[in-house]
Length: 140
Image (cartoon, rainbow, N blue to C red; front, side, top):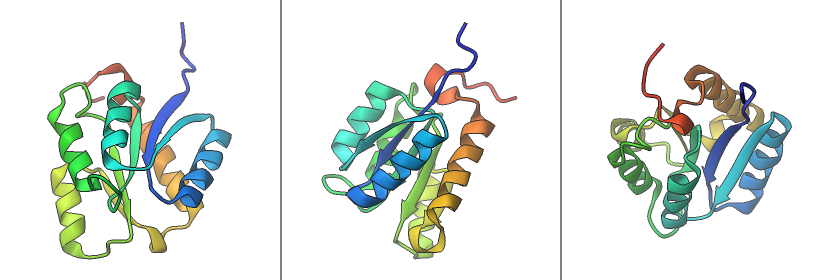
């Protein structure tokens, strides 16, 4: 039995420095991380990895993060994976759009330290108990 299964997240972020910092910090928290740099490869990676959480920049090449949220939410096997939108877009309309499409949180990059983002990720991983990876949609 694998009761201590490592959590898995997908990060879709085109800034290599930012994604590397998150990757290193999350690895120290015993989290497996896969990083993708654009919308299409990120969505394909989500479908393969079926992560416990998605950390998603909204302004990414190929297809933006809004498209990724829409595509994830269309797929029953992916729809319950929590998505944290992480962006420099500070307009209320962008926040409302991301949340309306299904993101569970919206963090403006300049308002949160790396440590605060990691804390948020950990909160959602603990709260959701990995339901993204096992397809369990039951609420506790």
